[in-house]
Length: 358
Ligand code: MRU
Image (cartoon, rainbow, N blue to C red; front, side, top):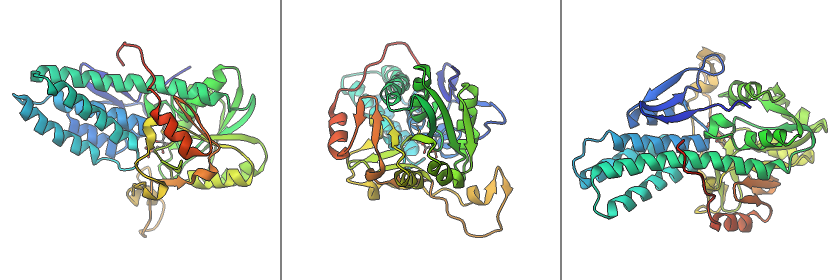
């Protein structure tokens, strides 16, 4: 089954598929400067929480690799600056900060013992590639746990794009759907277009179609109608940040889907890696919500569709834990009471990966 490749580490630089141009064109860019990677994240060349984390890690690796620092101390100063630039790209997806922390920890580890600059560079490139590999393994495991909850034959709904494009693996929510189909379940996916950025219409529809997975594209305001029909067996979405009590930030529009799901007795599931947990915050009120440009609401692909009026664009909303039936992770399934369940999954050992490079 086709799996999109949103990001690759190559000898020429970091190659990204430009997701702003999909589905019309499949264009890639090769970046050799970490500042270009930061810009690509901010401007949505790459998006989706885990993929943003992989991009940030590769951005750090690029920055260090091309540094002209002559000593470890010089490199350490530059390293801090590189991490700061990448941290300022997008505020909601905690995977970004998780990946930067991993790179910082690796830098500290390798520079603790006497090490030349070259050795540090190699170690950080290897760490970024390892993070990418781990994301792939993580998605597969999430898929296996989540597939059990999918119907044998029926319709499932998603939101935004939580597929290969969003992770660099097989996807989280779409990974669950993919594995379920590979196991022989007959699923048909309802894809809300996900205004204003249209990740559903442009990316999920493209990805599922390329993978030969049956789908029907709907507009966001059709969600209630379809959930009320009794023909939707489950909903599965990704997540950008999960607070200690299970409140979950995901793409704007997810909250209203979860509420309508409860009203219509449709189970609402989240599929996300443990790196999406933010147990340092008690609940969803503490999740920073990215506010994107109003022009993304007033314009569609550069064409004005509204008069020149104020427009709001919170890019994410928070679904309270009480609407979430279960959270599929690579370490198992979290169920109510989520606080306890999330804490115990977070303390489990991380899954291991092979040694081949991503
Ligand atoms: O603004 P985006 O496109 O980065 O938002 C993406 C989402 O909200 C996804 O659902 C989430 O990151 C999970 S991706 C596996």
